[in-house]
Image (tube, rainbow, N blue to C red; front, top):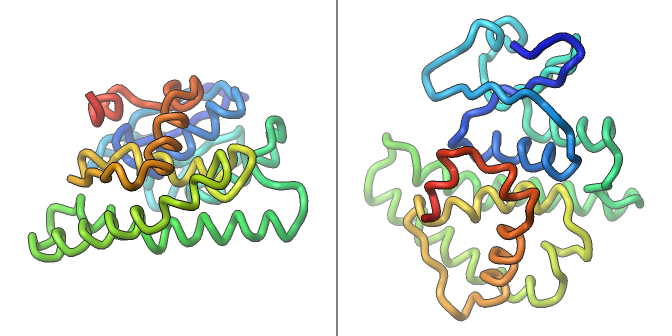
Amino acid sequence: MAAPNKLGCYSDPTDQYSHRVRLVLAEKAVIAETIDVTAGSCPRGLAEVNPYASVPTLVDRDLALYDPTVIMEYLEERYPHPPLLPVYPVARANSRMLMHRIDRDWCVLAEQILDPKTKETARTKARKELRESLIGVAPIFAELPYFMSEEFGLVDCCLLPLLWRLPILGIELPKTAAPLLDYMARSFARETFQASLSKAEKLFRV
């Protein structure tokens, strides 16, 4: 468990939602003690603060948060610089809807592909759907440097961990998706993104 008065982050080193939180921490330059939690294990400290024993879980003194979106928005408010959400309410709402759509449209498919219980026919269908959807949205990345934004933000922190996992999802994007591929290469090269990667995640792309 994290030391008193120190931020602690229980994180699965292969989980995209844990990766999101680690990326936000890196972007904010927030020092936190990361406690690795592998699937099927539950450290005593985690069970004491989270009734679901799920990851990611963020512990800040007497506060424990265990929903990735709640954690990211808490970090945004707790450490406002650099800002990862727009200033104005309408733009903030649009960012939140994009985060919701990433979860609903893409992350659900990724989870289905990675779930060992998924039948191969369903996995193939999910892989095809995710690939085609990403190819379809690729032109959008030619318009702005980040996902529907001039500035790097929480939306990118949701999307990039998924895109980093495309090789283990069995998805290769064609050259026609060049704007998306350029966005990926540029974003993956960020010092903060590299700092957010666990040792296991680094092996996803070798």
